[in-house]
View 1 (spheres, rainbow, N blue to C red):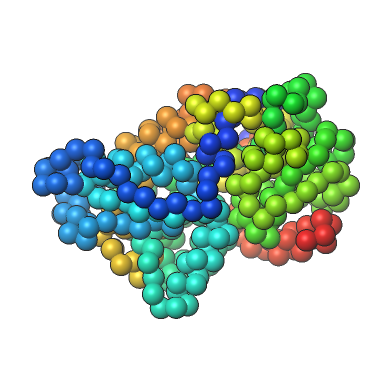
View 2 (spheres, helix red, strand yellow):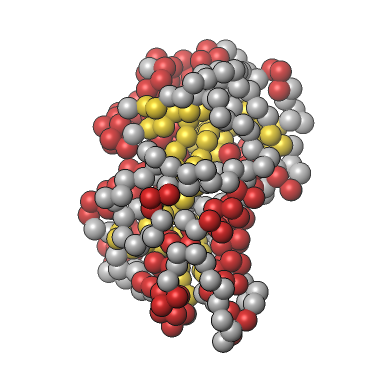
Length: 363
């Protein structure tokens, strides 16, 4: 099932630098303590988070996050805030959701789990892990504040950022007036070379193609395949290929990633289509076998705090809280046709979408 809101014509261009989109395949790091919290001082209080949990997390010394749903700036912000507020060191690995899911699966198979928390833009995998007991409830105190329709309180995974999708282009090479204004135009008209993430490797791309084939039918995918389309396994490579001129349009473009890199000044921009804005929520969860369970629980709970939701919005993300902060430089999507994929729809049609894509695009 797809959810549609009232629509008006929307073609919004945002200056989008490439830094967050050109993240390295993975990155591990820690920060220098930003306050006395990590060296014996009193940690700052965050509303809704229990002080006993903070103290138990501090005894564990740190927390490990495998991040498929975060941008690198978002991770660096998280490191800084967790150190400053709670004295907790965050170590992360940043890859696309498919690679992160494979890493977690490999650790589970080996019987040696290093990660405490995982984030993905792949709701299908998250739900599989929930059903299998791989992830567990982090007792988030303000689940009731999440916007209606974004969270299932019976599941341990929680949404922490709303992610709208569009197309990306290089403003140094492409006039916005020459861009398609609808997904139908993108598939039926020649707007230059296109680079797409593979839905067989990217959870973001899978949700995107499931939503658009649900909106316009499988024939839309066949039309798109007749355009000049190259395919990459990682959505993180799209920006580089568009920026270097190897492609004119990249799909799907992730708004939260592109806005968060805006200060870098690269000539990359994002446009939203008038016939629908595919959107989904990035999710995170603590692992049932987390080596640092209290720190893991604290990390998940902090993501839904007003403090971190505001910080994410300041970086270009969209809050999942009712009435929560939105990015000051983001497009006004209040009148857009927002498309959201029901998880059951992705599970039901996902394999067919991947198979058809592979057939049409020679994967």
